Length: 145
Image 1: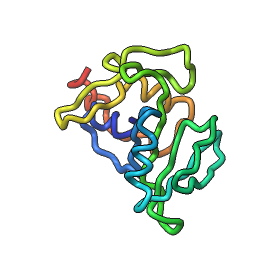
Image 2: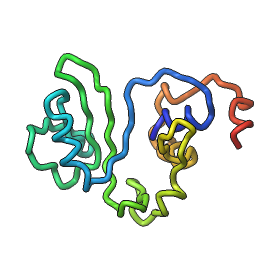
Image 3: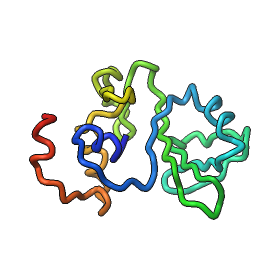
Image 4: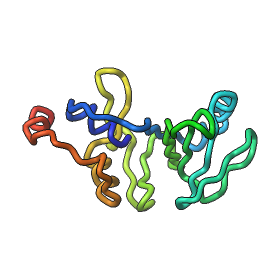
């Protein structure tokens, strides 16, 4: 997701502040058990952060988690939660917009599944941030399109 998906597609390297990962909500408890001893897990609910104790239920309106090693460290992971079926992608901005997961994503040569760049750019266009701007010339994209 995010900048990593754009980088993988375009082949243009840039600095990343965190890693964006998408998880199906059905896998959330297994993921939390896996990370609970090494990472602090925070629920992001409409811009408000809530620290989640191990085993604490996720707020009903939460669709994103942030992870960091401890309170003194920077955020390292941005976990986006998806509630559609296991083979379906559903937009977080408009739940009426959905498609087969295979149509919304692609698998890079490294074996990682990335969100299609047009979906990523549509999402990023809503909240453009300075670190999403690039000095890369348009030619960097041409070999991929």
